[in-house]
Length: 347
Image (cartoon, rainbow, N blue to C red; front, top):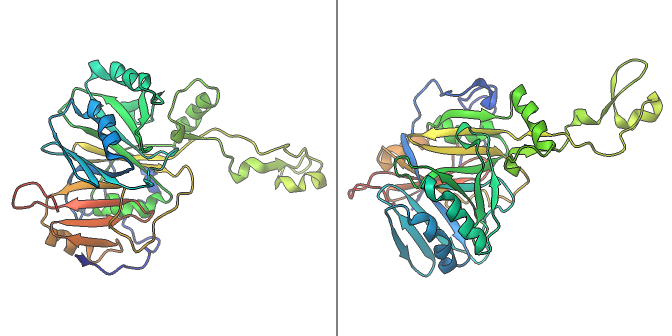
């Protein structure tokens, strides 16, 4: 294994990114070509406690795709000619239950409702939610696998892809985009949460009229929601001064409906969503670069070229054969698979 030295944290203003984060619009790309030529998001590696139960859960979903299963004592793999979903056995799997992390798999549209109902009949908790991406405005079914990984079923009869999209949570979009956009070349397809109409739409959720996924909205107040107006001067003051200025102090923390920030990126015909973190998650130690859960990307360059492209960046990385492992600033992991002599990079 080859390990690159870890660079210091990325200074502000040196990320080669948009100055306003995701707010400058869909289709944004850096002026310079991305140094790593990603072709597509081609796989996921997840954690699972019971591999037999995991296979039994996913077989009704994956049976609609031409692929094969491989299983060993600590590993379960489903692979098609172009994609893979792998499960690594852990006694206490890291699944980020209750957050926005999820994996979406395509199933034939004619079978979606029947398949979802079969899981509900078997005892799985089934939710019908919608998301904010333009392709996901109609509610679709969400489940959790036996280990707690959240699964979305997407009705689609297009091009045979298994993985429709994957979503992970981040705290700082700008810093994380240095990996996902500046380095790996993701194209901003759509963003949500920064426009006035997004704010207005959140009020429908607060009234109970919008079945949007829970990680797409929030009702925690910002500091401005605790300000009061001085009845004499009109000045906004913190609520702790209510008695001094003769204004009414709020009786409790207000609940203010807001959209949660989300940005959607494309890599070829695949899609990744970054969601503003819904809670504080325990990150793995910063020296760990190869871990799970992680995303898998196919890249056009050989591993030597990818390593050369990553060397001058602050991105931590490790190399094993034709595969290079990377980690973003908020602890999300990925592997970059370069072509191998057999055709498809396997690392």
